[in-house]
Image (cartoon, rainbow, N blue to C red; front, side, top):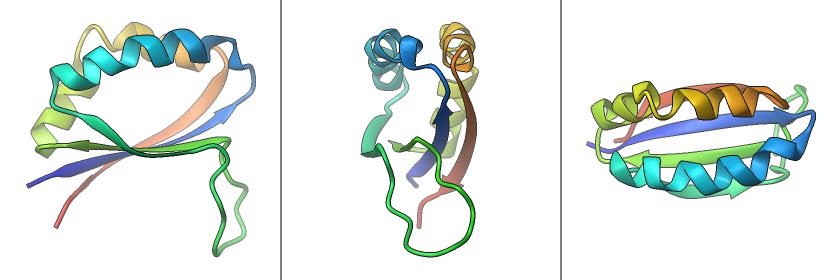
Amino acid sequence: MPAYVIGEVTVTDGSWAAEYSERIQPLLEKHGGKYIGRAAPAEKLEGDRNLPTVVVVLEFPSAEQARSWYADPDYAPLIDLRNTGSSAEIILVDGV
């Protein structure tokens, strides 16, 4: 069953973004993941909270592969890089 990682990123300094974008793609592919949605900015249809700067939706063949991607030691430096100029909420949901 597919699984989806949804990332909401609030960017405070975008200097990390180009390097992150270049390096993330091979890691996604390594774990069977792919982008299926990316919005900057997203469009609010309902609710009162502030929107993040960027919303991404990643699809993986399974929740286990999504967890393996997130736990990959090669991803840790990219998380650190992203955190130099942003804050993020990352969630994992099962597909139906």
